[in-house]
Amino acid sequence: MMEEKTLRMSFDLNKKKVFVCDLDGTLFMGPHPIEPAVRFVIDSCNSKRFAFYYLTNNTSKTPDAYIKKIGGAGIPVTEEQILTPLITLENYIREQAYRSVYMVASEAVVAHLQGLLPDVSFEFAPDRNELMVLAYDAELTYEKLRRLAVLYNARPELDFVATHPDTCCPSEHGPIPDVGGMLKLLKATNGMTPRHIFGKPSPSLMDPVLKRFAREEIAVVGDRLYTDKAMADRAGVDFVCVLSGETTRESLAAYDGPPPAVVVEQFGELLAH
Image 1 (cartoon, one colour):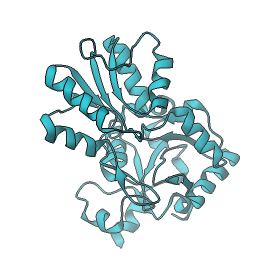
Image 2 (cartoon, rainbow, N blue to C red; image 1 turned 90 degrees about the vertical axis):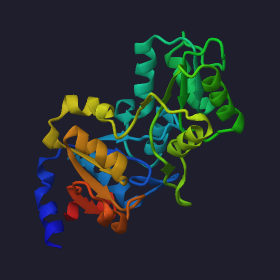
Image 3 (spheres, rainbow, N blue to C red; image 1 turned 90 degrees about the horizontal axis):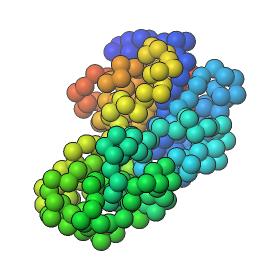
Image 4 (spheres, one colour; image 1 turned 45 degrees about the vertical axis):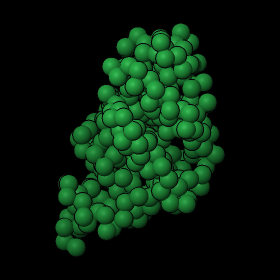
C-alpha cells in the first residue's frame, strides 16, 4: 500500500496539459462508451482544463470512423486528434515509393489509403506487388491469408509489415483475435515475419503530441502494459493504467517492469487521485 500511495503522489495532475487516450478498453468497450471515462473527457473539454488525443492500434476502421465513434459519444473531436498506425503506414509507403501493395484490411481501410495514395495500386498482383501489409481486418477471409502465404512462398524477399502487434482486441464479449494472433499463424505456416510492426509501443505515433507539449505535460492513458505503457515509457511520459480493459490487478501484480504512474479502475476516477 505504501508503494501505491507513493506512486500516486508522484503523479502531479496539475502539471498535465494533455492526455493521449487509448480507445478500446479505456474509453470504449466494443461499441459502448465507458460512461464515467467519457464523462470525464467531455467535462474536461468543456472546461478546457485538458487537451486530448485519441490513439488506437485498431486498424479495422478509418480515422473518419473513429471521429464518428468518439463524436457519437458526445466528445468534441477533430481529425488532428486521431492517431492510428494507418498514418505511419501511409508515410512508409510514401517514403519507400511503393506503387503496388497487397493489403489485408477491410474495404473501408483500403479505400481510405487509396484516397490518400491515388498512384498506388492495392490489388493482389503477385508479379508486381512490392509490399505486403497485414492490418486488423474484421472482414478477414482464408483467401486473404492464403494470398499472403503465396506471395511469401514465391518471393520471400518481398517487404512485409504489420500495422500493430496486439494479440487480441478487448470487446464487450471479452478478448477477440487481433493482428498479433494472425502473425503467429503466418509464422507457423511458412516462417513469415514482418520487417516492421507499426503502432504502439512505438512512440512515433505520438510525434504530433511531443511537438506541441513538454513531456512532463503529457500522460498516456490505456489498459495495456505491453503496448500503451511501453509506448509511454519509450516516449518518456507518465502512464495512467486503467483496469477497465485488458489489465487486471492480478496481471499488474505479476508485471516486472516499472510500475505505472497511477492506477485507476477507469479514467473517470483520475481526479480522485
